[in-house]
Length: 218
Image (cartoon, one colour):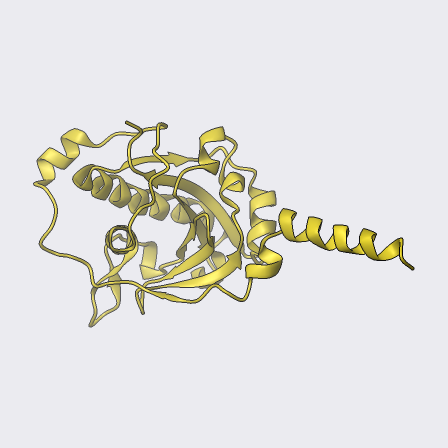
């Protein structure tokens, strides 16, 4: 009995160190985002001139108010009366969800309430792409299509339109980042089955692209 107790203690310690989400799963809370700041930003033509992809990121954390504006720019509601968004979607299906992977955990952006809803505790950033830098980028956006919102459309149309709609959203992110001095890079090199499993997605949800966002590496 005396020899078993130390083994059990070491096992528990190992689990806590390797799987921090075991202890932190209950600590994640919904995050209410601030109202978008409509007065900020640079002229569109200057932003288009500076729009670019970057694989060199600082590990500096993205402030919550900046993340709030970024998500609203990406696919927030800009016409509250109708619920329509900052990016178009085929037949107004609004089938694309934005998941936000940070060091703290995985969140889902809820545009109707402009909140981040907790999905998973723990850091899954390394799973959002095959490139080594993604594990340290402060924010990795994951674009997920929910085919259940697309009615009886044929599967090939669901795939086509969800890819096009994701492109509109990711370009909004590019323009916001160019305006605010952030670096970004949209990525398709993803182990989609593994990431979908980690995110606990349903069979009718599909990972389309991921996009890293952070401050440029100095």
